[in-house]
Image (cartoon, rainbow, N blue to C red; front, side, top):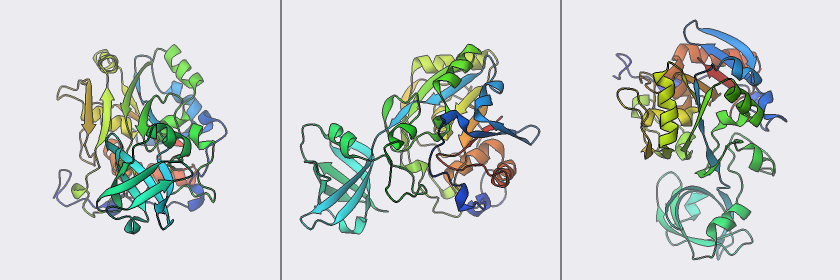
Length: 353
């Protein structure tokens, strides 16, 4: 039993059929050219719009909250020493200086003590601990500028559903990044923000919409599969976030004066809901978001949500279903499929009001 009913809620209740050709493989030429499905939770209505019309739906006095994390090239190709066997490493989290939690492939070949050389660089590392599900702890050997070398040789860590023969393209370094990205540390983009351009942000501000920036470094938990049937047993991995006093003040002033808090993305939503008091006030914090939002959760910080379309049976679909209601959200997804919206990271978006 869980908080929203007599019986356990199953992940199979959050499934939908998606034709593979609707999965966007590349970004549109113009960021703000994407479509936007506007969903009204009060009336249950859908409206097909363009993202460029967002300023028509966000009103003066509202507060648009952005996640300004910056994606770094976290995917590294290397070879095992001395065999030369190829391996791929996805940097997940820097535990301490030079020591990282990583996702390895093929993981079975990397046991404690295994050594790796990355690309044509002088960067090498050794495996110091073996964890479950292909996760390893590696320590980079002393080097003058590990961060700089990673920036040079690393690849943009595109999601696995973006399938290209040649892997990430040079354009991905720019396009798999929001125009307002500042704080390095994410291994995946806060994709709802990919649609924004300086012109759209300028128009919103000219319309007296408040804009606040927070930081949540998107981690592996964002795309980790839900491996349990009963969603009450699922836990999204923790992610680091920062909400400055200035940002908290702007958001709280919006609430006090009757404006709506419009979260751009599920990551922004998770950070805000992880730092809200019982009275609904956002608290400035450098913290860890370990909140798992599933249907039945009562939102205290977010009034409207701009988000991309998410994978079936995913924790992100659970979050938007908690916000908009399962039946309404699955209805919206069916509508989007029939209307040939583009899905996932480089796809279109929805605005849930």
